[in-house]
Amino acid sequence: MISEDTVFDDDKVLDEDTFLVVDYGMTLTVNGAVSNFGFIQNYGVIMNNGVINNFGTMSNGGHIINNQIIENNGLINNLCRGSITRESISGQHYHDGCKIWVGKGDNGKWNVPDNWPPTGVPEKGDEIRIDNSDWSKESNVILDVNFINLSGIFIDEGDSLSVIHGAKLTSRESIIQNYGTINLNNFGRIENTENSQIMNVGTINSLSGRILNDVSDIVNQGTINNNFLGSIDNINAGIIDNTYGIINNTSKITTYCNSVIKNIEPTRIIGSEPVISIPCMEQATLENKSSIVGMNYTCKEKLGDNLVYITTDKEHYDTGDSIIITGCASDATNFQDLNLQIIDSENNIVKTSAIIPEANSSFHMEYIIDDKFGVEGKYSAIAEIGSYSSTKTFTVPEFGSLAMVMLLVSITGIMLLTLKSRINI
Image (cartoon, rainbow, N blue to C red; front, side):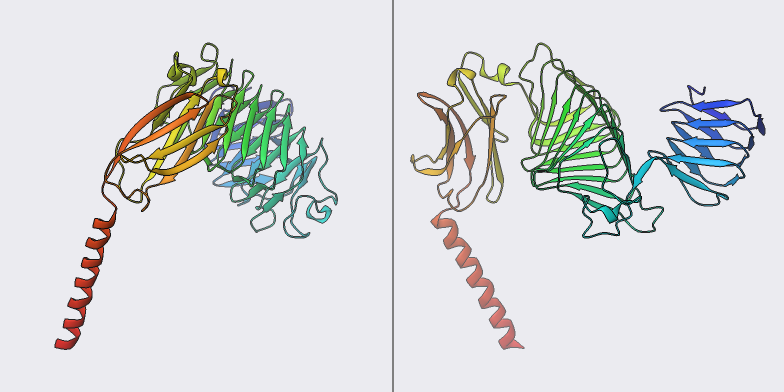
């Protein structure tokens, strides 16, 4: 077994009794010539910079990157979750025991039998491959029904899977390997449960979608974009390992008791919303050795002995800016509706909203600094639940009647100058 990165610089012959295994996460680099008469099982990466003559069997559940020549006189069994470049490979290779998307049916829909050979919609135990390399076109699959994944899903580079309209993709004791794009739109969601794994090397976009990681792992070596009402919930000893990836967060990430988020340099989590919220601080863990850009706090820390807490992302705003208000409401408030107001220095109500706090006690709201902020100076953001309240002040430059007059004067001046120039011409 190859359990560490290995390089074959010299020519090698693997006889009929050879059983060579490239383990998960390991790379075998071939720079010379290898003749295989035995059995090669790949779960990691085989990087071929030389020549591989296969007279035996190669079973690929990982990735074969072929930069030169593979002469196949035996059997190349490319498993459902395996990938292999097609250049300069002679002989036959195939995918074994999986449903492969071909998209011959209607509108790219998952639930159309003709989109899958052999004909039929995938069932729970099927391994699934979304891969454009066999069909010379991009595969864009739309999942708008619930599906339970019990074996594995592989999404190749350049291909996509979109979970939409409240549909749910559930993994149980299984794996999702994404080298392409996963889109979670219109409350579509992925539930990674029961010791499953999501391996992301591509991109996951959650736009008003949800990723639930329950007693499972998410290994991010690509990019996760969590935006606009999207959420990532890490619960029940789940692990999110962001060691080699980037998470762009403008919505909500929550890690609950006994769960871990690892954010280790050189990767980072970037966001304008509360990036990590840990309701059970004693047992949840954030292992951060890189940068978290945005707010990072627990409601337990911020509330202290208070029942309501509120803050803003900045102290000063200009016209057209977004003001992001976040805060916490104690369980003692029984999660009543929270009244959020912004008032100016003359006690005029500029903005008002009714909010129901999240289950983890947090809340947030975003407004635009528009012409309703007509009084120069200090403004107050006030969160109220019953008789309890919290206030945060900020400043806005003048954007009232005087500003409008100045704007009109400027426009009039420009028009007169333009007219004068035309007359002179």
